[in-house]
Length: 111
Length: 116
Image (cartoon, rainbow over all chains, first blue to last red; front, side, top):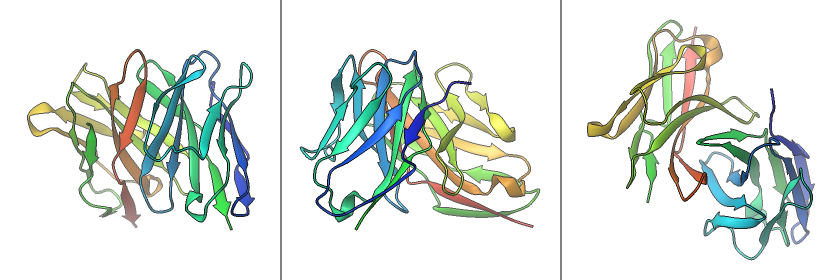
């Protein structure tokens, strides 16, 4: 069964460093998403992406964040200069009509 | 704007007892509603979804949920809890933002513990 994959599963970085989180959505899906979940809190929408551009973004998704689909399979989330409060689980998802399929997540720890 | 309220951040039941996890939603258009389960240190797994067909929706692992428009609710139930059901459960609502862009808004989650 097709699935969304994410790498790495866990990333540790120093405050101020750039990180890139990678996702491979399900191949015939057209909409891609990033969500984050700060420890003990709810899952929050960050951004949706379609046809090589951002469809919608939340107020969390500020200038420090960017997304890209560099090739036909990968979908990346870049955080330019990480802050302590960026520590969270980041989930990638892709859409089949009205159902989203989630990846296993990347746990980002900012020290 | 859409929103979800999950009543009870923690529900504890005995093995074999009824599970009831509550979810109320707010949406300006007919919503799509979902329940996801998250086991410790894992991702989100879809349990079931309501997409404007039958109001009683059956999902995996014996769970079901009923969409009640008059009560703006989508409560999750299971007749008999199993130890393996212990996990965090998230209710979510989505509205199409155009095309097939279905941004999800999640509730805060309910942690279910099952006692032997």
